[in-house]
Length: 116
Image (cartoon, rainbow, N blue to C red; front, side):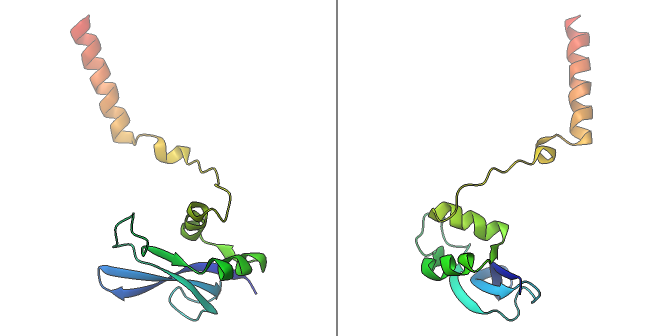
């Protein structure tokens, strides 16, 4: 069974509240899960202690059993010091879009004409 540690959404419209759960990867996001491991309340301030609460003993148990954390959960675990910090690089995201490149070229052309 392929296990995941992931978020299950709760709360009403525009008021999200997430449960951190250990679930079979084939189950739906808000569907059946095996164990609730904690909560994540994104509307609370970032420095609040209640924003992310996890039962670290159970999280490490599931990681030892082979459960794979999702990207967001992996970041939470890195912040908690359970996992080593992963190097992330998305060079495509850092590149300016086509229109921005065109505008920059236009500005450079105008600046060159004004200087010369």
